[in-house]
Length: 402
Ligand code: DI6
Ligand code: FE
Image 1 (tube, rainbow, N blue to C red):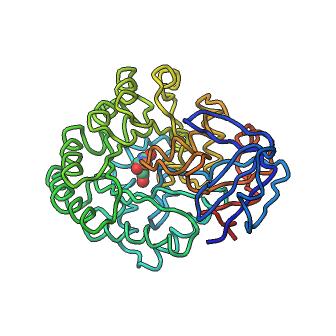
Image 2: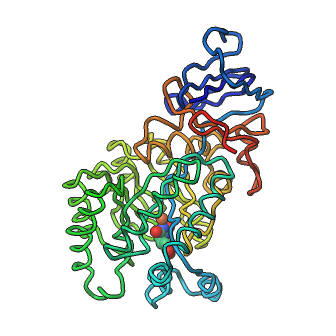
Image 3: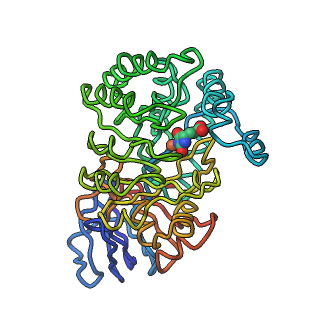
């Protein structure tokens, strides 16, 4: 594997989860891993002989971005729902009337493997163009054993022809599919007894997620899903307290979830429980914006309890149709009041933690050499634009991404 030496870089490291910089720095990547980094003045020739050199000319160099919450695998469009919501219908009303998640399920089931892969690939490429080097992809629009596994397989297959690292999550408990209408508990049985065991034994998912909400699954049902995940050795995550306080955060904490996501309606006690459990709080400003929500997530409480905050796109056709993680960084600042440094930590180191990946998201010796190089001087410049910002170069596993 080729070695790479990046010189004259303004390194943003996030070591220990904290914002830190090396003004005129160098970074040596060997076999895809950061073998040395530090101030230019400390660089020794012997340490990097034979390496390809890349002069960053003072540019900002951050860890590659990590999008830790996406629903990239789907077919069809939900543009009609924007029109319905503009006419005053709520997301919950549309879902109850047969729109929402189950309409995307119908379109996804009807799509061929090639169509579904092509649509997902387009969205993945758009995320990557902004400097994303790790993406989490959830299933959740198949909602039967074969279609959920198919979505996970398609998600995993994309790593073969995209220079990005993909982490997959089984979201069988996303909605009750039409064939189980009125029999949610029977569907939960299917998720627990057939879907989770298959996803685990076939190595198709790294975690199990669920939509814990009045219009989806209650805490008792999610508990059964989490018990099954635990039996099969999979970590859990949860869509929690997005539209109402359903006790999702406390449940996620009880199962030491990797993350609890959304959290707009989470109480102080819920935030405290998550922080104590070591979970990450994933904030999703795209969904907040698109649904025109007004209840802000309790950011002050998250800071007070030291809950690590990640920022993600939640890319999905119904509530957050976006493939721009940097726009989410912007919205996390503008709508939720994060500082640019907090928001950038949320799209790098804390996002990696939300996926249980401790080998990335931070610039430090021994971590993966996944970097983004920006025509910028400070993190605020990455947060100050609404879309359109692109890295000048991306390094993935120690190589310049073409
Ligand atoms: N993530 C989800 O999975 C749901 N909301 C959210 O923020 C619903 C997605 C959808 O409507 O398709
Ligand atoms: Fe989501």
